[in-house]
Image (tube, rainbow, N blue to C red; front, side, top):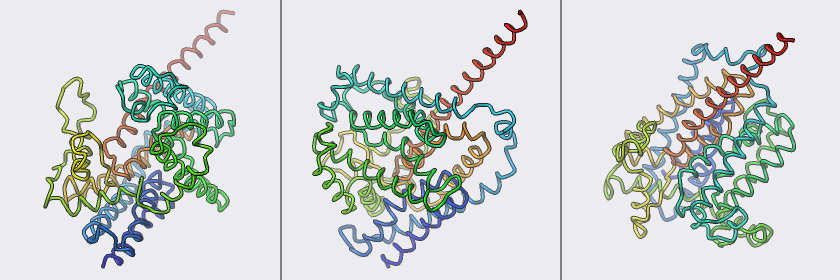
Length: 435
């Protein structure tokens, strides 16, 4: 039974991959990520029949959840196809609101600003300068005395990372090189592996699913996907080895250890399924469900905790961490059990229908993004793809912050650009009139 359900689970995830590919949907990365970190390892688990022996509930739940996402996505896409016609105002090829060159430059400026705030936060919290972070312990750099500057830096860096894919598409090779070097420096310096996501996830999406996809382009996309996966695991390996210097990057042993971890499929992102299996088997028998606390936090996201303290429930990922890592209870760590695990932990079997919410949101995002000018759409690629990646792994609240604050930041930036452009053009006209 486990093997049959594992195969069905894998096929349902592939259905999501195929449908989103056909529709050139941004959700392609969501389905692809779940296929890689859960669908394929799930098959291995069913064949190997390893430590988590009862997968029946886990596979049944994820199958039902994925089907709800796909069905809601398809239906919402059709319902919204001829709606929201006001978006056509932002997709007029005769009067482009923002040129590709300006969009790339604006995004790159946001990337630089984000990098500045991230290292400023480290300096304020630890006194370390940017060139000193590599020799410092990762926990000191990543967690000691973190300030609000870090949150600002993360959003700016995430949104600004769209400059990388735009520079590739529009052949701005200097910005491609500089963006890549910034990403490597920030990721290795701070030891936070997921700073690679907003930089490389859009490239992966573009080469595999968007635009005119050809075999050579897809092959390049698959290669980028392999390198992206290896990079995420590599940063974690370097953290564990307590060496984030250039010497570690050139050490063949680091690459061998990283390769072995990926092939074993039992650490890093591949280990998230174990948290999912555990929660399905232990809630509600051993642990209390979250009663929707994750989604209550999402609803209250616009209200800053500094304005109304304690209005938001405790981050349920911390509670799940205490459930799974009982020996480390109370440290404040977070556990991400895939999107399936978070839905189960909050609602148990009723959580299947949470998939309808995410499917409708995917349909709405597709309609909005496909209805606006291409250069503006590309500016959204980094926060949207980062949202999809984080959502798949079960970091629900964090994932939504990327699109919530990302949309606010991009809207504010475009508004400022519009005002500046109007004032600049008005000044030019008045100068000509006075001559």
